[in-house]
Image 1: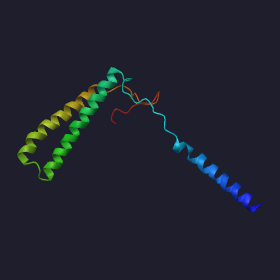
Image 2: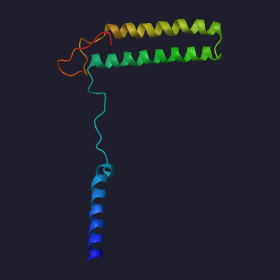
Image 3: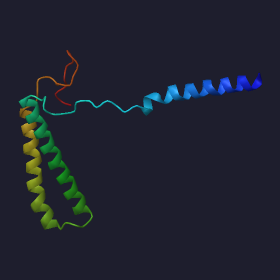
Image 4: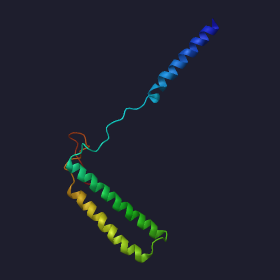
Length: 115
């Protein structure tokens, strides 16, 4: 009788482990992550955001290289003007295309323009 109770307990424990692990063992369903569903205005804004990010990253890298001595003062002054101008143009373009509402915001949610 003890062997039967032990076997039944082990089978129940194994069933619980399999049931709990089942979601982790399944292949996840792929979601549609294509950008083809974007409106032309949203596609333009995304391109401007990428341009802004590239310009700011290049500026940050230049400043780091200057601080560590990889870039001389003359080269830094020559390059920082161009990178700051590119970043400012990207930011101005983004401000000009700022949507009245955030497309990702919940319906009726107000967007803070200062964010």
